[in-house]
Image 1: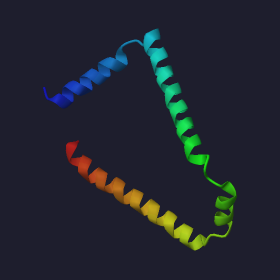
Image 2: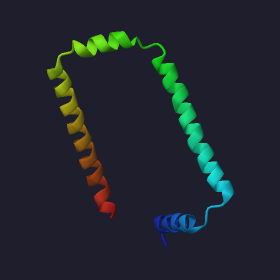
Image 3: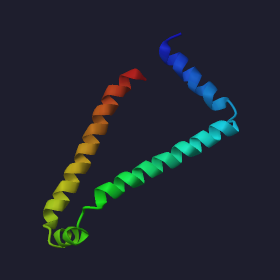
Image 4: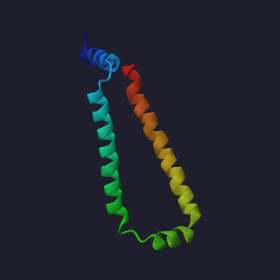
Length: 92
């Protein structure tokens, strides 16, 4: 049996095991900690952002450049996913 097969079997066995109260509480605690850390970091990032300046720049922006940026972003996402798919297809 290969390592991949063993890891798949271990994952399936872990999912089949009934969740105990301890594991449920730990999962909830991890989720709450993730939210708390994210909120604190977002606070540190946005506390120095002058939102009036952001609003002014968005209202007076060149929307053609913004559209070009969005198109470029989506094209790069599609190219990245296509490349990843070409890497992963031989594994199946």
